[in-house]
Image (cartoon, rainbow, N blue to C red; front, side, top):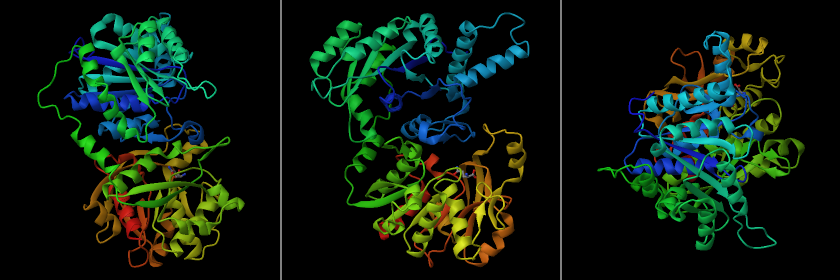
Length: 549
Ligand code: GLN
């Protein structure tokens, strides 16, 4: 338990009515606001599913898998927290039901409960509460904000709510519940309805929990009448019903919330005093100003394979990539206008590769498996030959090298072992220590994950961008550039401008500026370290080439 337990504050954020209402952005924004008041804040994300981590989940269904320095593969909201709070999170800050159950069951097998009966309540709930405390302690924060995934009424998140409730019972002045709910405006009525939100709050009451604040999401602002209605029927203070209408950019949310004074309200409810020397939201405001005062747009195509979700196009699989592009563009006074191109459409003939000429730059993000890959490779060939700036991330780098081997070195069957292990030119091969893991069916959390150091070669685009020789970046891959082909690739002009310190793994591949304005790929994922007020140097270098074009 943290030493100052009674003083440490916990805020639990729970969703009402439906998923996707913006709990993650709410949590991040409240965190940023409390930081601006001079408090140290640490966020925690709970995913109630039984997967032990997010690493094995399909990105089209679940969205991006975000990777921490530690190598933990987690929900994309962890990326939102890191971007909004501009602070690196640790393993303690993420949990799933699977992770909790696995721990408790393993402890039981090791006689950790000394032979007594182990039950969901209190053993699972105690484990959950202990993890909240550990995360708070490790971060040394004043306030922990916990986002409970799912929606109130779900079966899966009940134990997390129960753990939070028991903390509130023990420390009523130090625990707050915020419900982020949705208020629909049915097209046939044209009127905003509060009933579903009232029901959600009543459902929360049935667990023994009272919401202290309600964040009312909807297409329009909440009017006075409806605010009062929610307050009256749900026993919430009317100034604690916060209007949160849809807005153009998620980065406006902290400023919008502050208009309703949410920061001081939370401080009052948690008995927190004003702090001298609090930094305020100045940095955030100046970033938000950049998002509105740009001069001109650049057109960026994101060529990927995880866009289709039923009849809908969906870009959630690439949030960090999208944000990283935007930050660098804003930093250079431009707006990045993004277009999603599905590489499967190139393969089916629905889209012509020549359409890439309509863009100022092309980004290929990470991915796995065979589908859509030939479409991407023909896209890379096209941008290389037509000198369109290209930035490849992880798979996007591996495919850059394969394209180069096929079309410049003439190895027509060049491929990755992930797709065709029989190819004579396995330009991308499985890393030696990964082979046995696949044979054993050991897929979870077993890739090369998290922060690793790399060394940059002087005089290259990469070293110029970073302005330093030694870097550290986050990884998530099983395959690597095959050392057997490095000499041949280098002879034909490809430059490996970043390598692991032992020179064994190729971390960055690029063509010199004399040959192409920007043709560069990274084995790592730079997007995970881009922040609003400190954009990533490689994205900025790419964007400079894009603007020049
Ligand atoms: N599928 C590739 C690998 O495992 C690339 C992974 C990625 O893009 N994250 O090496």
